[in-house]
Image 1 (cartoon, rainbow, N blue to C red):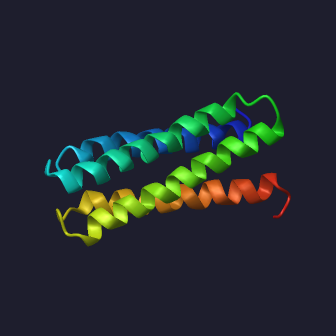
Image 2: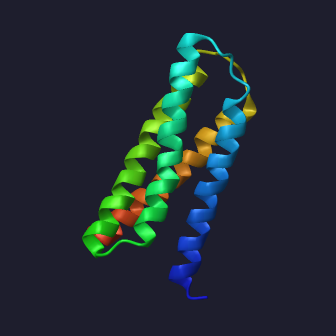
Length: 122
């Protein structure tokens, strides 16, 4: 498998696995109104990271590809906000939450670097 294809597969698997861990993590939070809203927002933005990355793989042009990667990055950044909010409100203390946030930081770094490369700024 060419290096480019291997890297695409690797990030796709990382994103997918991150979403699976996120879904499992969100199931342990309390079901009060405040937490429920944050979790719903996080679930939407978190799954959007993967959906937009997958959509980019079948883009019809380079511009279209860049746009979907950009949407994926924006969703990842939003997800970091929601995860940090859950962490900082001390609703639950969990190593998994911090691990999820760290993995998402790595994913956003990869997506951001990819965008810079695609736009010829790197």
